[in-house]
Length: 369
Ligand SMILES: *Cc1c(COP(=O)(O)O)cnc(C)c1O
Image 1 (cartoon, rainbow, N blue to C red):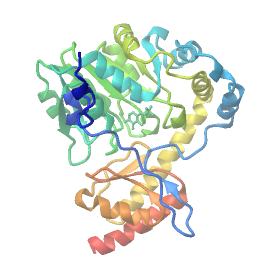
Image 2 (cartoon, rainbow, N blue to C red):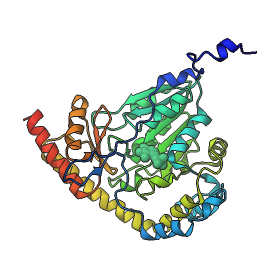
Image 3 (spheres, protein in one colour):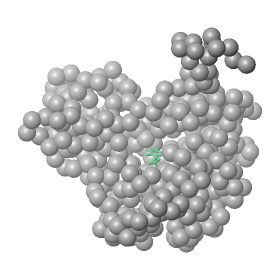
Image 4 (cartoon, helix red, strand yellow):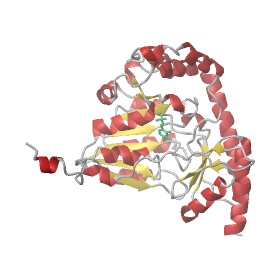
């Protein structure tokens, strides 16, 4: 029995897993700070600055009474629609509470204290969190000076302990997308027992030639799993819904690791309606990509070194000047994301981008003038 002494010892804390000490918690993008006379803008979380399509909002209203019952755990209607549109089997899909849940589930089904996970860095901040939580050894392979995955170095990092490799295209936060040919070559170097996750959270915004098409890769490789989300191009970040595409054995594994009834009927209905308006969603994404290209070009015209931007954000690798640049934007009532290695600016309202551009020009004059 636990002695009364130790049971009442208020100074002792519960023992948590040692792996928790090896990675930082996820830090969400900050909200903007109020500045007298300026409309505040949040460009810190890569959200879609447009509202969901009107038909999607109608679908949510129509499902307003759903919360009394548990949702359809199998997400049957949504998976049927997705399977048709993507040209995959319904059993090659799992719907989850965002791609975030998929990242947790993927590490759960592949990783533990005896395994190693490889991913590019900087990349999405959840990769250290989920692989670290599983206790895996984290192999962070620096991206190139152009913000691209160093696929040769990633292939060279594979060992007998590697159980998971994560690729992110376009890469958050640096911006470039992977090319189909380079990924196919990379996969030749990856033993087929190692699961390769391709995170395509921003694929709808990629406009470069020859960008990797995850769906084709999954078709050809039973060890590839594709991660997608309704949070970014579909503008449904607050509904927490995403999906994975993979061969059946991987999906069966994921189904054991995801939370039952995680995705609400409301979210499923909204996602389904958004899919039925996929052309409009893709049009909007292309518009945002156009704004992104103009914004990136305007920064380059000021003299900034901006990596190729293929998602709905632009990256400034400012390193030790990141905080000063973030502060300059905060003074303009615009929240951007300071990730230490640089600052990521989500594409948003033109007024917000114009304010960042003028802050950037002043910043250059002050620091590089
Ligand atoms: C936003 C994002 C996700 C997932 O977001 P969810 O909202 O959980 O679907 C996944 N990967 C990357 C790279 C992201 O930026």
